[in-house]
Image 1 (cartoon, rainbow, N blue to C red):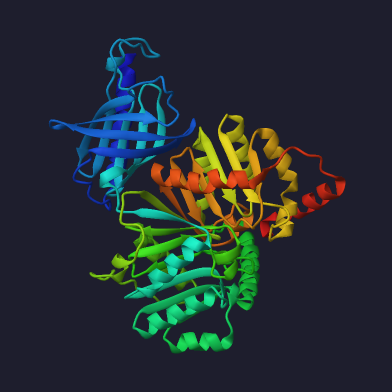
Image 2: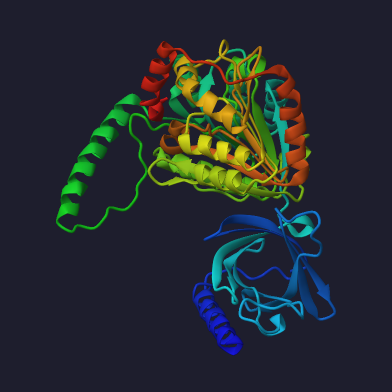
Length: 538
């Protein structure tokens, strides 16, 4: 019986190996040295899991120790084994402890427990399959390289306008080759006016300046727009009402036509971006000289600099090139032409004060209506795998799946803290009223729900288990997650996550009122229930 199971296991591994080899033709070369710390994330029939794998070189061999995040403190060592490099593949084989019996009887030494077959996505990311021969359990896994070998990313947290806007103005003023600037709201006021002046000055100095804004929040008068154009600044105002209505009508017609074709066996249409009347671009992303970037929740207007509580980030490293590509994608989607140039050999960005290159694992995650909702997927995955702490500060929170995820996290003993704007200072009253029916459910489940006092909270941040944190433009409502274009960074770095926890949650909880279970009158219940019917538009 043992030999049969072993054969089955090795046949499965051989099949996986052949499959992986067939799909690895376009893969990049493996890093020259595997030794170091890797973060692994997987999901299978038993749900999501994650942990760290430390790879060591011992003589001419590579060995590893693999530990899971939810491993008990009393458990020592962790899974250990060998790692083999075969061309563009990395193969892991678990070392078996003698003397333990398998489910089928016999010495466990004769039945390999777990194998991994991974191919290269980038020099710092592997993806593949983990297979347990004894139990025939197979899961998909991704490994991210950490530590000294990781990409040179560094993310600095910028809390409130008093930190973000001086850093932004300094970086803009020193731009030498390009400024690619995207925001949802841009007002020519005491905050936005000086930034427009900086853009004009740099454009006149020969810097390529592209400004991408959304019609919903573009508040710049015609005379000022002509001044921008005269300086050589390219401005695209996307999602105008006329185009939005036209696209929505076309979408309705296409849906009807495709539905009729489907009745007669027609092919399912390919996914395409939605740019209808309710689809806007909510991103706040700036890239300067392709060397440094800013991404987060702050728009360009005086309330973000002087009045509201909000979070942004200052980014350096390899992820900035991805931010450039993200900007180019949106610029082209809005009808513009753009060819990305490599960053200059000597960039003034190097002299701008701010975070130096570092070694953080940073994932740039975006959402495009009709094409992908990766931010929603990543939030659900992080909430689902958290075992110790989920902490969220969010301006607008209405998505049912996210709310249920918070409740499940709290019920399994995970400290779950949610901070939202206070009732009196909330800037969108119908969102506040629609949320009323969710408050008691959250609190009863064990979620610690707080409402921030004194000023509007516009943050879109979260941390999970002190391990990974996110900052970006996306709220956790149906509108942001499925109908708007959004962008977040997810930073897998305990130092950055600790900074976010200390500078946001440790400070903001004492400045908030804790919500308790309370009786909700019939009128509020009726109004909240009615508004929730339209939560996809709030």
